[in-house]
Amino acid sequence: MPDQIFLLKTRLHFSLTIIFFALFLSGCAVEAAKSVDRNQSEKTSFAAKESRLENSSAKNRITIQPNSSADTVRVFYKDLRVGKFREALFLTNLRPAIENLSDAELKDLQMDFAALARRIPTDVEINGEIISGNEATVTAKLPDNETDKIELQQIRLRRDAAAGNNVWTILTLNDEAEKAVKKEGRNYFFNLRIATHEREAKKMLDRIAKAEMVFVAQNRDEYGDLQTLVEKNLLPEDALGAATTGYNYKISLSADRKSYAATAEPEVYGKSGRHSFSFQASVGGKISALKSEDRKSQTVRN
Image (cartoon, rainbow, N blue to C red; front, side, top):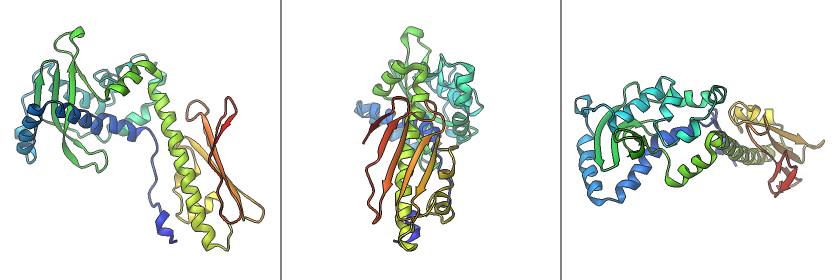
């Protein structure tokens, strides 16, 4: 099996940036699409509008009225881009996750938000606005979550009647996720970060297993240490530290290098992760099931 199969030339970024970007950009578009699907006439209207806007330029921007749904979208991305994260999130249904955070807790999330902010265009072009009762959909040109290419996207909002007719909330989450935010409150982002780190730690262990398969086939049935696998471009540099994944990784080789154990430990228990993960590879390449251990309760699960 050639090295190129597992060759990773660029660093992998496992921070919350990807999650946040999906929530604030493509997530909005997905929810908007679902809303449009429930209203065929509105869907048809948007199809015609999108057709006209595909090749639009700045002159085709709509006139934005103060406190309108389009103005809410404009202010959201403006605040997000300049680092006013609390103010920006107050305009979304993620508000319960942010409103009770202390300044210190918000600062702890600053790096993730800042990375997102850098991807927001200097001037977000807003091309359309459709209001139906207490619901609205705004079209704007934003970076695609996967390609970063600026594309026309739909952003769904609802009017909060209790707060007044001119108060619009951007719906970055679907109904189920919104319930989770209300339930978890200020812990939502931190739980999300832990879940993301733990998921990516398991993926990294899977990469380690695959990298060792390549290495052992080329080195007289002997496995390699972590540093060597990185130097051979079989693993990303992220595997050498916890900066991007929140986990520290270790490969323990047997004396004859014919077997090994791989572990992933959270850098800070309860903050970057709650579980440690491990597996063993014996002579002949047989790999054990991945084990998950809660460091607090010391409970091991297969």
